Structures are given as structure tokens and as C-alpha cells.
Image (tube, rainbow, N blue to C red; front, side, top):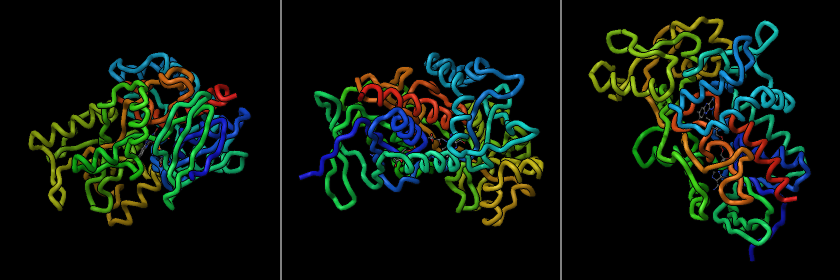
Length: 401
Ligand SMILES: Cc1cc2nc3c(=O)[nH]c(=O)nc-3n(C[C@H](O)[C@H](O)[C@H](O)COP(=O)(O)OP(=O)(O)OC[C@H]3O[C@@H](n4cnc5c(N)ncnc54)[C@H](O)[C@@H]3O)c2cc1C
């Protein structure tokens, strides 16, 4: 007999979106359980380096932020979700600070960088371990609350019940654990790890990014959008082998790095939208103007020698450490780079409360679609996790009450 537990809100996934939802639902008075596939720390969110967007600059506004998202999505995003995302961004940053996240400061304010597709400097950072800082802060908050965490306990099936949902999870020892929950928040991330395996390509993603929870929701009848729109990170590491599949932070380009072909010529705007920069690299290599890595892979050069030492030390210390330990100093020689599978742009359709098209079933983070349309800007995923994770948690608690 499977062990059975009853909760108000069940959260599936321990990335930034699941943690934000779990913390918010608990704060709203719900009895919360969080299940996740591997260790609590195992997720894409913890790997996120570059940063998180919010309009804090004197020349910036949530409206301008929304316009940049809209343009970067090629006008395919859900405008209402975009407006929620950008309007709540400054509040989301302060909420993260309340949970212990210390963003890098400068001149009495935040250190802001301009990222691809942005018309203003808007990217806040915690060095280049922003996702690690956010997940640590939120995880500590959840573990200190009345909520219960179940690592190594993946969701394997979900059924609708008269008063909510019955979720079946599988413990490491093979035993089933069932939850009767008033509301469920799906925060199980994207599928780029599995997709890359199937294509025989590299991915930046952690091995848990396999997409089976999306499949469960689709089989229950939940609607989805843009699921075919997968994003390549323009700057996967191509050499040395230890850096293959690593995403060189986009902040390298924000702080002055440029993309060069075999002739040392710049061939694209380094701060264009992600899909445009990735496509420009594919095209350059296709046209025979790329370079080859020592093990025969295609690449172009990312000239990181143009980054000021001061900026690199403050905003790229982890990247510097990783490359230097592989024998390459990015401040002395260009890096070899090629696009790498990175992000699932689309996902389950949600409304402004993060509810899917199925009542009482919420979704937030990479598993949800609409906020980025078919092309996400960097720095808006951690933001989406925080803004819509909070919304999902609060709405799920209300639904279950
Ligand atoms: C290397 C890298 C760098 C990035 N840099 C940035 C950046 O600088 N800024 C930015 O905004 N975004 C960045 N991103 C994107 C962003 O980090 C992710 O899209 C986002 O964090 C996803 O959060 P999430 O909570 O939706 O999913 P995840 O963080 O992936 O968490 C999903 C969770 O669900 C669990 N799970 C999966 N299947 C099941 C199951 N069956 N049952 C239970 N649990 C399950 C997983 O184990 C995991 O805990 C980066 C991504 C990567 C990979």
C-alpha cells in the first residue's frame, strides 16, 4: 500500500519557480509539500549565472522593459503576462533581498548591465552565481518554514479528484508516495537536456530537465503553446573539452566582448536578441568563416580580452576561475564558442494567476509558456520564476483554502 498524505498545496520541482511558489503558499497559510526529482539543489536555476532583469535605471521603466520583451519575442509573447512580469520586477527583487539575496551594488545602487535585446542597462547580478544565490535564499526560507520537502521523489502521475488532485510520486526505494492536494503547482522546468540527448547535441541543462511533467499535464488536457520553440544559448563553450556545454555568461558581451570570425572581423551585434546572435554564428560557420576547435568542432571566437579586468573580477569571477583552471585566461585570449541548446521558450498556457487551463493546476517557470513568446531575453527567466512562482503559490493557497 502506498503511503498517503494530505496537503493544501503540492509543489513539483525545487528550482527558483517551485521554491518561490512553495515559500509564498506557505506564507499564505497553506500546508505545503514540495517534491522534486533529485536533490533539492539539483535544477537549472542554480546554474544560472548572468543575472535577473528589473527596471531600476533612471532612464528605464517597466513599460520600456515590457517593450523590449515584446520586441525580442518578435511580438509573439502574451502581452498581459509580459506587463505583469515587468511591473512586478522591482518588487520581486526586494522580495528576494528579504530572503537573503545580496545583489552586487555600485555607486549606492545596483550594478546594472545591458543584456541582449535590451535598450537599457537592466540586469542585476550576484557576481556570476545569481541563480545559486536565489535558490539558496529561497531554499533556506522553505526549509525553515512549516512546509515539507521530499527530494528524490519524482511525480509520476496526476489524477483529478472531486476536491483537487491526487499525485503519485516514486521514492528512491521504489515505494509510491501519494498526495491528496487541493491545488498543485507544476514547476518542473523544461526539457532541453533530453532534447539535446535525442539530437546528439550538447546542452547547458542539468540532467533532470527531461519534460515528463509537461507530458503528464498535456495528457490531462492542459493547453500548451510554442513548445516547438527551443532556444540556443549563443555562447556555449567549445574549447577546452571541460567547458563544452558550459554557457559562457551573456554578461561577457554586456561588458564588452565581441564575436569574431576566422579573419578577426566582427560579424554581428553582440547585444542583439539571442536567436539573432545564435543564427549569425550558425550562418558564419556555414559560410566557411568559422574556426575549428582542436578536436574538430565548429566555432567562432568570443573576444573576451576586451572586457575590463575590473568588470570581469566583479561580474565574471566564476567564469574566469573555470577557464583559468582549464588553462585559458579569457582576459588574454579569445574563447572558442558555438551555440548550445539551452531553454524551452514555450510551455503550458497560464493566466495572470499562473493557473493552467485546468482548474486548480498551476504552472510557473520554464514549464509555462507565454511570457517570452518564441524567444526569451536573458535574465527574464529567473524573473519569471520569481514573479509567477509567487503568484502561483498565493493563488494555489487561495484555491485550496
Ligand atoms: C547554465 C544556465 C544558465 C542560465 N542563466 C540564466 C540567467 O543568467 N538568467 C536567467 O534569467 N535565466 C538563466 N537561465 C535559465 C533559468 O535558469 C531557467 O530557465 C530557470 O531557472 C528555470 O527554473 P525552473 O524553476 O522553471 O526550473 P528548474 O530550475 O530547472 O527546476 C526544475 C525542477 O523540477 C524538478 N523536476 C523535474 N522533473 C520532475 C518530476 N518528474 N518530479 C518532480 N520534480 C521534477 C527538477 O529536478 C528541478 O528541481 C540559465 C539556465 C542555465 C541552464
